[in-house]
Length: 289
Image 1 (spheres, rainbow, N blue to C red):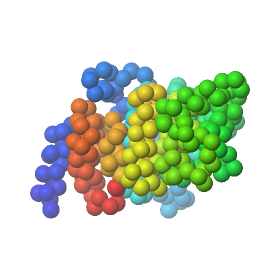
Image 2 (image 1 turned 90 degrees about the horizontal axis):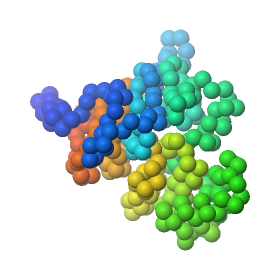
Image 3 (image 1 turned 120 degrees about the horizontal axis):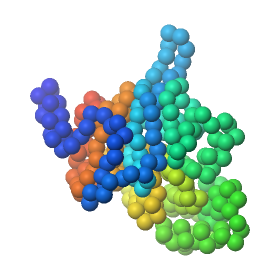
Image 4 (image 1 turned 180 degrees about the vertical axis):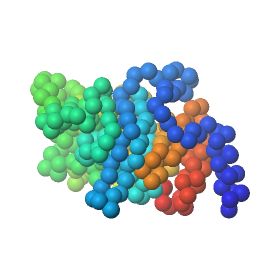
């Protein structure tokens, strides 16, 4: 068992995995350096419980994400990845540390400013869609613009432009109950990008979808990233989903266990590297994938 572990470790190490990520600039495929910082997480801690019974859900995590990056976070259930995402999304607060998004430390914003920041700077793609059943797909997307007080004469053109990019023009007049899971998630993706947020946060976006719908959604997220320039941070259990990212952080016991950068790998090659790191996490694949 030990021999197999170290054999796997050496293979992964040889392919460029670093033990921890400290926020230095990385390179896109093709070698162009990223210089525009969108997200910086500095020594973030999140503890639950009281004296004598403290759970360290997030334990001193730090990393940086850059404009236009498509980044994934993986880890077993209970590893702290969802808690970390909740802190970044302002759903939860940190015990210690800083989270800086587009130059603002969200850990220091008062409640009223935080609500406004969330509306204007963040986009969300949830596993359960969170569409309003009484509104059409068009209205669900347009609602996000209404909330940030977009001029009425701009709303329709912006909705239709995003819908065209994500190939959902034909379903704009339908209600959520008339849509498949994949269609709902693509509508949710359109809603996430429509306001031009600094960062899109995706929490297990393919978790409730069949394989065909998941592939279609991943194509849509790819469009958000590559065509529309969105910066995306995605939590996922699924290695196939994660293989679409440019970079992945692996979380274990509330800490960053490892990092993978796709570089010039094909998606299949990157998928295989992900599986190797999953082995290093110390559990079977079902705990992570």
